[in-house]
Figure 1 (cartoon, helix red, strand yellow):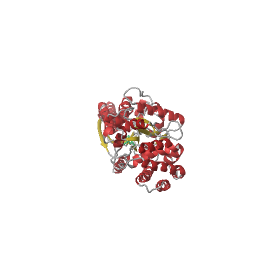
Figure 2 (figure 1 turned 90 degrees about the vertical axis):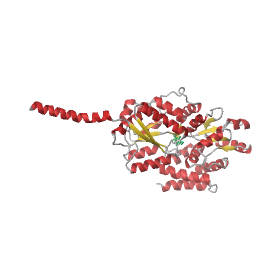
Figure 3 (figure 1 turned 180 degrees about the horizontal axis):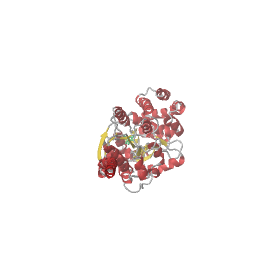
Figure 4 (figure 1 turned 135 degrees about the vertical axis):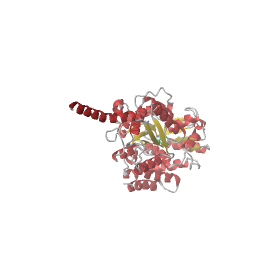
Length: 424
Ligand code: BGC
């Protein structure tokens, strides 16, 4: 009797133990990643993740949402409300903290611990990925926003240097326009207008940038410095051609790289698109930081990352761990970033091998210099600072200013502050 009871107890406890082990063993890692990279070099870059994920034994699916970040954010919100949160989403800075605070994210701490991420991820990104101490997201890259691409053809023709300050920039544009060229290639959209304005405000006054765009400080948004920045933006709109509406950023890039326009202000996803189109750095384009009036190295940082949302299906839970591990692998950080124009989020990757371009190497050098000089900021235009509702309000005012020449810089600064205040 005793023996039988012991055997039964033993079998029961073994069976209980065996359940999770068996279901874990049976879990087949899969993922459906939501992101904004629907076409061109961006789609090609994310395809490398799918390939690596499948090679590592996972089943890859993706939901690509075209348009810029706002569309992805809106889709994410509606999916979460509908109870069908995606297993992985490309998501930025403050939104990660917000979803984490809402209890929607899941942690990949066990993978992080085993792989030692705390000592290899760029320190500026760690706090973003761990809003309350747990790894709920993983960084894919570091993008630099404040790039000025120039046409060597036009600069050489007119004997001009790449401008280093906004006064030099305006001076060069006056000469370029007088010679019959378009000075600034631009495609109007809320985020691209705001990308340009990111560089203007930062380059004129980095402290104003911090207060206004990182802290959403209403006095800074309404300040004389902001009025001056809008006045510079107004001047720059005058240096653009009439075709900015409906033009994509890739088309604007091509204008500079084929020698039709002198300058293009845009983040380094441009480098990926230029490579794909066969344009050569040093021949078809130069890359330098956008002007700064305060000397030294400047860096406006943007980072793409993937956030994990709570799942009940063990396949997705396993799939999240595999995705996190794949994204953080040095191999992925090289392959993806070479294809994306950005630089790795890991600090232990050697950029002199693997096919990184000169612009990408310069990005790393300037990042280090900017950190050393205390000038590094995160990008408002690219969702790295304030919550989307503040960013959205700011973008609306900035894009309206670009579209409507009757709005004065004073009115724009006031509207910027009012729009943000209305969201508080
Ligand atoms: C994203 C990049 C993307 C770029 C242009 C940025 O906000 O971080 O990954 O390439 O927008 O679409």
